[in-house]
Length: 563
Image (cartoon, rainbow, N blue to C red):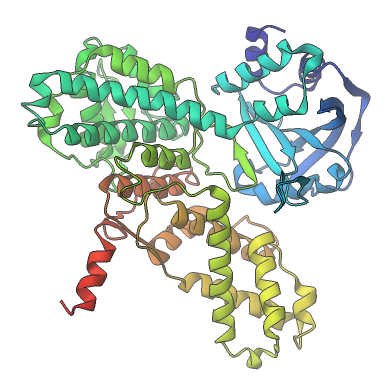
């Protein structure tokens, strides 16, 4: 199978026959069932149907490993990113005796589909011996289908096909490597960032006249320019840019920036005459019906977002002129990648550029980051610390609350066990609670008090960086509240994800950092977390007084000395 054939497959709607043909050509030892096996023990709220298509045998250091192949037809109305826990549990019982699984998630009416690789974690014990860790399987996913950028998936599976019968389980793991994507993307991003900086430094009319010889100001401008463009790549993925005048949001141009650049006559003036107008006079300005004129009297819709991201820093920057190859190469680079607004959790990884990657980019571009105490904290550590902090907060809240009026007498150990299970597994164990309660309704009231506690929590990160810990806590509180809503009402039909997130951000989360760039990225990640759940644009909240630039140490010192 040639590269173009793989690309054609990955860029079309899912088809079982074509998919089975691909697997047969990609792997030497494939056993596909003539009649797929229907899986009966599934949650039909999540999946309309699930089938086992067969399995693939691979070698791992002389040991035969099996990858089971499944297909899941999603139920109507199921959005993959919002139902990760349900999907994670969907086929759990079926992969107990296998090493890994390939799962395709699709819906007959959707042009997009997901190809997921599920694998148990491996690692090393205290003595450095390799062991199998029995824990939550990790899921790695490619977003495929019409209109998706599939360069990474195509290149990696082309390498697998070229290996023929020598493909190992390690090769499959490599094909789904998130870390490799992150490094590749950052390395290339850094080249483009350096290109903009070097160009401006080399032009006296820019470096001396506009930036007054301040090279740090040039670097800060370049960081913000590329950050704004990346933000718009997330926005155009939702179809919110260049929406035809009488069309709904979501019908916009998914390649808006590239197409505007290609159609621009004087490309050296693209920043001066297009991007600066888009940033500061469009996205940052209210307009009737969100309309803007784009060439030849053509009206289209672009949202008013506000929030501070597109506030003008310095009017002098509008006069900047760039060599056209800088933007041409930048857009060509970005167009090769998938952009997803959904941030991963430690057990779910989408092989795409997500907002968390912006945090990594910032941390890597931060000058003298070690001298300033700026370090990247691995996702698993952030996840653990956020969960443990929330468990301690909820446990303390419950210890200080008198539940005797509800007829509940919980010993501390049982209470901690319930809260830990709730936060870590997103499970509500009524059986344990009912043993210490006078009625089932009393038990439900106890969980309702957890919801009240979550509404009242206050979080302040005195060195917020790019927002890793505060974003982690937003995710944990959000999924906890979603679990409680499902427990109370049986489904998430009336669970307004965007409103819940907005309430958490506005009432619970605060942050400070001495670096302006860190604050910009942290705010951007929170804005994206709100946009992801919105079917149409809304003005972004102003985070100027929630996530601020400053030194928390200086303020503490001033308080201590009484000033």
